[in-house]
Amino acid sequence: MVTAYPRDEGNAVEVVRALVARYRGRIVWVDAPDGARLAALGLDTERIDRAPKRSARTLLRFVRSEAVFHTHGIFGCPRPVRGKAHINLWHGDGPKSYAGAPVPSSYLVSGSGVFGRRLAEVFGVDTSDLLLTGLPRTRQLQEPCDAACLTKLGIDPTRPFVVWMPTVRQFGAAGRNAARVDTTDPDGDAGLAGLIQPGTAVLSAAGIQVVVKPHPIDLVSRTLAGFASVSDADLIAAETTVYSFLGASAGLITDYSSVWTEYLALDRAIGFFTPDLEAYLGGRGVMPGSTHELPGPTLSSSDDFAGFAHAVLGGADPDGADARQRARETFELVHAESAADNLLDELARRGVLRVDSRPGAESGPVL
Image (cartoon, rainbow, N blue to C red; front, side, top):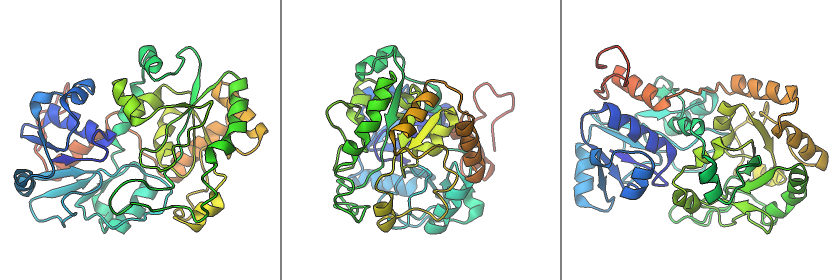
């Protein structure tokens, strides 16, 4: 059984892709994307049973399943029982302090030894059950949007673009996160997009497009006149994913989000825009030491943005390259060509799932 939020969350998509190729049993995807979206993602709809969460039959199938892959838990997050593994794919490694209730899990998947161990401690997962296989969705970074896809998203494919991807600050989702605010200063984030505009003007003058990818559950969209913006709905309409979209970019601007830990796989320029740092630290906060050895500069002044533009356009950037390498080492980052296959191999080794060998591999079936 697989369940994820959002429905087409990248880690779940790539795990399902690997399961379709290598697992001979039934694959039940709870509240899965519709058939058109599955087809656009290149998934074999004949192998996937789409099941509604609010169904007694789905609950029964959950009880009978041998393994459950999830990003946020399911059915009230019951504790795992013998014979049924709960594999927590989570939804990103990063510096933010964890602010929710623990999600009981048999195994936790991560792409960072440092961030993974901290989250495993919060969830009560033994470090021996922390699976440092890399996050499956990073595969999509290596399959970037083509020119036609970028055009559908309103991006000029002939010019480089950077993505501004701020993390959520004011939760607009229903449930336990409803109305939560991760900063203590209510004025600090309302003008975030306005604060970055002088810097985006510098980037635009250098010939770089700036595209904002708002967080899907943030009450504030961060979009203002002059910003190109790409929503989750836009990505679905363009038949692509957020990580393929990122894979086509020339650089990233972010903050406390986990996205930079994965974007490092591309070894491209990363900048940090954090004008509300003090307020954020006084609110949700970050993991101790996680703001040290970041893989790029803090962007505050016009000169900062000019230097970032130089790096994005392929100028000499030895300091940026060194910072990215130090970050990989400091946070023990793991990137793999096929993290989903690595995950299935590890679960097979532990006797959790019986899967076939990787397509094209010379060895016989695993386990």
